[in-house]
Amino acid sequence: MQTHLSEAFVGTPQGETAQAILRKCVHCGFCTATCPTYQLLGNELDGPRGRIYLIKQVLEGDEATKRTQLHLDRCLTCRSCETTCPSGVEYGKLLDIGRAVVDREVPRTMVARLKRAALKLAVPNTKLVGVMLWFARSFKPLMPTNLAKKIPAYEPPKPWPSTQHSRRMIIHQGCIQRVAKPAINAAAARYLDANSISAVRTDDACCGALGLHMADHAFFERYAKRNIDAWWPEIEAGAEAIVSTASGCGVTIKDYGYLLEADPEYAHKAKRIADMTIDIAEVFNANAASQGKALYRKVAFQSPCTLQHGQKIVATVEQILHQHGVETTPVADAHLCCGSAGVYSLLQPKISMQLLDDKLSALQEHAPQCIVTANIGCLMHMESKADLPVRHWIEVVAPPE
Ligand code: SF4
Ligand code: SF4
Image (cartoon, rainbow, N blue to C red; front, side, top):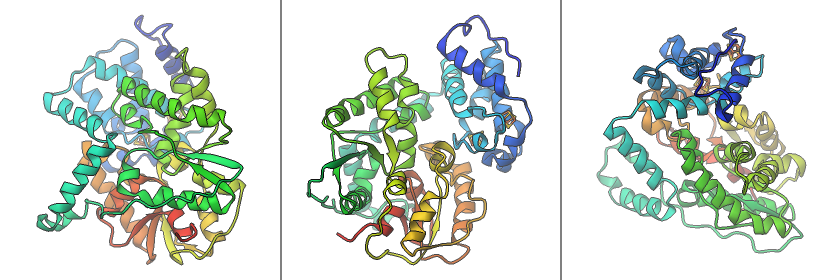
């Protein structure tokens, strides 16, 4: 695709990156066929190729409008289009640039700004999330069933194994997951322990993805740098990997190198951390070991977009489940998003719920005992409406407490 950037973007890092991405696109439209929002809304501008044109126009000097912003807002950032694209167009990076530029030019309403500010204040604050969940659970009996189902049941904090091994890996604890579902990281720690690897906890925090979803790079940088500072002493002391049990966080941390490459103080550390970050499924891919009896015999696996499209980890979790004697049921349209997509379910609830209904129908079709996933956002989103238990797959195969 030919591009003629406006003066404002020529020679800037954003402009150069966007131009290199745009030039790879040959407008073939293959990506459109696998885009969930295009499938639902049927509008070219709600598909990847249409959004690429919109971003290109703005970078070439056309005025960004509310309509431009709406079509970019409706994108799930699922990156299904990247998997389909034969030309290797890095749509996700382009969208981040496009959203930031459009948000600078098109002010949001006061209500939208307040909503976004509240999310950025609350989600990474684990103490506040804990208090909010406590209040929500207290009033659960008074809520209508569909609302009550959105409140996760209380899970007490779980102990982590204390055996010291010579091999050590840091587990990223993150924000919502450590409060709402502490059993996930405890299960990962038990699995590492059973493979003679110590799981290390640090004072880490939100991965920063929340800021990227809302075009707030300053927010992202604040949390990414906090994590780097928390992990660095352990890395210098010999920790061999950062392990993520939430694919949405893992995909973001794996991008720290790119996202902080212009920061003179953090670029080097960010690159090193990005290179040593792995999903929990990748640990066992390299260190396969069978542990105990699985919790369920037959599950449906929902492969999060951030796992299959973002991190390109495909079929690994299924293989691990099979190694443990767990059958996985067929899932139609497994490449499509469940509608969670970070804070998308709160900002675009209508599209999100349509996608959730479709996803749950596909997952529940062959009568599994449980739905398993690899990302906390998808887990809680599906749990809010599923007829079955929804768990992280590591909980199914980890040794018992
Ligand atoms: S599939 Fe790739 S090259 Fe084709 S239109 Fe989509 S982004 Fe462009
Ligand atoms: S990221 Fe997902 S929703 Fe957005 S354009 Fe690509 S396929 Fe469509």
